Length: 415
Image 1: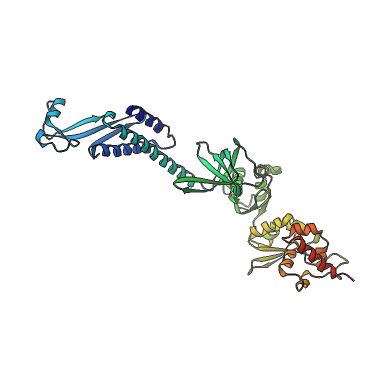
Image 2: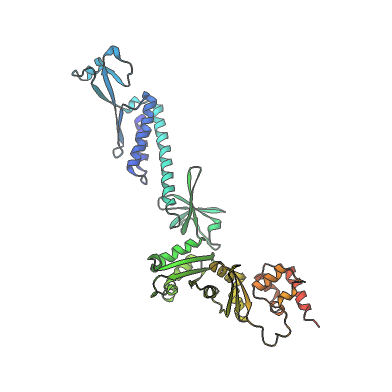
């Protein structure tokens, strides 16, 4: 039975292919020395030779030959009479090596050996997985969906290591089922109760950066630098890029011929709209580019308060703001300034009887006025021109607030 347990332990030992052989042998020796200490009191006079290929080991014990009457410790000493039975040429003071077999260990010790070895190997494997993936934080990995839950997805790599894709790190339109391959960024690796937890992300800006590196050789080679990425996953992203070689057009290189390079990334990100922007240290120009696809007439900068005002023609307001204010928000995040959009002029024929929205601050709360200005409504008529539903959609205002607002503004023009 002891031999069967040992062979079983060696079989499990040999299957740990992701751990270096020298490390495995050291663990096996350490575990056996622990058992030897329990059986014989000391392991100082033992040599252990591990042969993992054959699935066995050899243990030799060194003992000093002493006179029979001087025997004090049978583990460290062997009486002369016994030594001469082995080799009649032995003399007092010489050393004798005898091989310790599996049968010399108790069944309990053999079972403890198996349990301890398994525990040590599991700990080592966890540590190796942690180190391996900790060094890969920020890289992209591909795994297979093993199980899906409400708040997260369990993904296995090609070695069977577990990775987690939390719900908050999924693109809103992501849908994965068991067996699907998933590409994601290794966002964070940490130890929880001595177990490595590998957290993936498909929403992190660095995921888009790594995808661009894969598709655009100039980025991978350092000829084009990604200055900054801002995203609303699954909807829109803005990427500022700069060329390190004046002969290379960074925007054209990232997009590719007829969009060949960017299209694959857009599909991976569930049709996320990606604006590639040529970075410049000229702040007004950078803001102008960041507010694409709208055409900007003028930019005014307040450097002290990190604010900017963009003046656009009336037909460009909605483009600059974007659906739900997303375009202007991402543009502001990209340049690091709070951006407001104002109409550049007032429609012909309405200038004389229109009223600046700021004139209503005595009747309307300041924060409501500010919300209207953010969407480009800087006059009373520019607000009244919009449907109530659109005002609700484009601002953070409630329906009742919008209705009260319309009543106040409409009263200004009643005769």
